[in-house]
Length: 156
Image 1 (cartoon, helix red, strand yellow):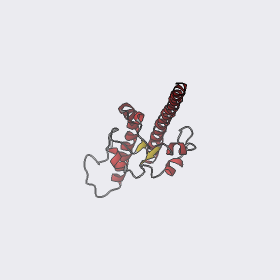
Image 2 (tube, one colour; image 1 turned 135 degrees about the vertical axis):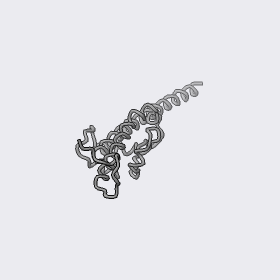
Image 3 (tube, helix red, strand yellow; image 1 turned 60 degrees about the horizontal axis):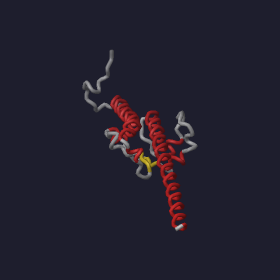
Image 4 (cartoon, one colour; image 1 turned 120 degrees about the horizontal axis):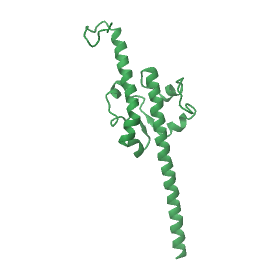
């Protein structure tokens, strides 16, 4: 009887330790995901393009994200960034569809509709702004674009 009680106590403590570790890692993934969204958003705002690699993000200057790029490895261990994503395709996505930055394993905190709207929404706005800015600048130099109210300069 004493042995059974000892096994139950040890088993319960082991499970509680596992659960605490699991919860801590879920929270770490969530924090890494949030930081990745901010870092990539700043990159998109600054360059007008989607990053091609972690190196692009690490060498970006002027980012005021605490600990970046020193903590890049910590984020890379927890987050996947689709560096092959097309910024034009991303600009048409909703925050529910967006998956170009995601945790390495399913994480309910990152999948929460509220969190996705609040934290993915600003990144998608930066993406849409960059795409619109790119289209305006590319149309300004094109000679094959027929004059229309959409691409006509707006002089006072």
